[in-house]
Image 1 (cartoon, rainbow, N blue to C red):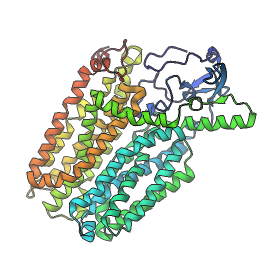
Image 2: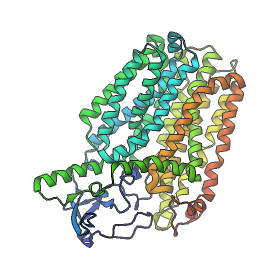
Image 3: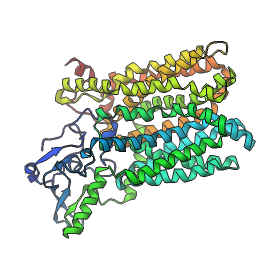
Length: 554
């Protein structure tokens, strides 16, 4: 085997040399040799729950015999033990990447629909916050807590669900969490007090976070990165479509129907996942195959790397819970990228409050018409998602020019450096066209550049963290998700007061100036990121790595 130069995880010394004589074919994306991968592909392998001696080729190669020999030292007897790591066979029909394109598209659409429903659930209730406030005789600020606790759940859930999916597979996590979410939507729909609504929304936020956590890995199980733009676009726009649908539904049937709609859609997704979508996670599939081989043959040497890792579950879970905090507070790259994404995520949820303030309070519009103002923002999100293949082609050109096909992690920041300016531009348009006497077209179209820049920034940030921290990527992304969700959850509580105190124009301008200041972040890391990584305990840095400026000139 060729020596790996882009990863600190080394090939196990005990791996048998006979592996080189076994015919193999690379079918699953392998991070060490495909620098064009994105966040989903790195997280497709169980780096977070396996130890540093684990050999990931079991999950990334197909072999003619369906096995890879491996020799280990027993921790009990101290003697050598022979194992057969179970792999997919060449053209194996059980390998999700070998399924028919039609069936892969079906599975993709079910997962995309599920994420659409989850994103819809997070925002659709903003279409009628006055309903529960009037019925339960509470302030408008208290009803906003139903959004806050839901988004907090989005930040807490991935810390547990991400490692669980690596240990038990994706389908059990999908089915259990979505089933729990469906159950707790019912108390929301029939709630007789605000306390029931808040508690059940928190539980739903935690449970609904699982599909959003696993979707990237599921798409990586099925597709290569250049094939994902269309399904990613489907649910990227979902949070903005929620208020557009919800406004008219609330007018027609009242605020409770916003929850009944969530229940119907979530129940349909749960049934589709339970009955029609199989497990797609390669390590989970191979573990079941190894268990079947041991049972059928009586030979106990058929194993997977997950079964050779004897560390207790609690030890592995502790790494998932502590490592994100270490990265967040000890790594400036994680901290500032997370802060930038927090600003964007907070802006997203601020918009759900700001639009009603500008259109309903300022112009006297109804809920349904106000919801339609989110459409240009949603179109911007969809359009940017469809531009993803062009961004990837540019990155592939950088890969071709860079030594060993490995551009530095900072190459991932190039789309962010261009798209970051769209956010303040859109906010300034929204700010200074929001006078009640001016046309509704101004603030409505101000949302388009915000939506267009949002996905470029989001994807670039994820890819930069993945390329920077590689096998610590799951922890880096978990840290970003946690702080982002907590900030996004808090913004809805003070947005309305901020707009009423500062005025529509100054409040939106304040957000624009904050976004403008954040534009410095990608530029600083683009020019100084490589130097910062060299002094980092967790970040990857290759001695042979060129600078991103050098990669562009080669």
